[in-house]
Image (cartoon, rainbow, N blue to C red; front, side, top):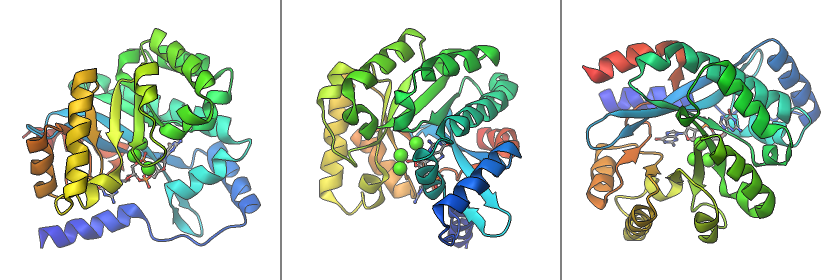
Length: 277
Ligand code: C2E
Ligand code: CA
Ligand code: CA
Ligand code: CA
């Protein structure tokens, strides 16, 4: 019964399919949502799969549309990425999440905060400066703010990506490669870029216990990451079986509904208390 309930909560968080919008109308509404502070970020814990220690949280955008209900994050992000709103959206995301994190950073046992960044932001000349400024302004140690970028960002314009990543590195801001293995993975950039974490794409984890292929893949990534000294994180950990198998293959960090669903910011400290006890 507990499982069933969890499923229900999961699907509620995962949001019912939203009607398709005319992209132009949608942009206007997103613009409104940004200026009315109507976007929220839910937090999903990332834990050590062996002992449950909380390593960090990932902030995931949530938009409850006044008439259409919850709009899936992917859909929102796809629209924003192709529009002039991207910069405003990103700044709002950083400002909201960092100010929230600043308020509880001393109560979360050294856990970090991870923020998703669109590849296209790397093209903005002011991107690094504004991230650095916001982190300073909220008095957060830069080591505790991870930026999650997908591989596409690194592949479309490698020389530009390299410059941005070097600057982030100079400022001690960790960079995580999101959805690793989902796209056109090129191992070259693991050598080129200063990368602090790799997140294996959920598609390799979801049928993991049944798939010898996915297990071998995770196994080789564990070996690769260990020799490069890059922490590996599994996303989409939904069951205890998956969690156990990951640990037995040497993948020690993970996120997923089986551990905790993304939750409103206001619930984070209560969750920490129950999780620790
Ligand atoms: P992502 O960065 O790969 O985030 C992980 C997605 O998987 C999230 O979906 C999360 O809710 C979901 N998830 C977590 N655990 C599980 C699990 O065990 N099973 C399953 N089936 N799903 C799980 P969400 O929140 O809908 O976000 C979708 C994508 O939208 C994110 O993928 C990210 O690429 C993007 N996104 C979300 N928030 C932001 C943001 O603030 N800024 C940017 N640029 N992109 C964002
Ligand atoms: Ca992510
Ligand atoms: Ca991901
Ligand atoms: Ca994804």
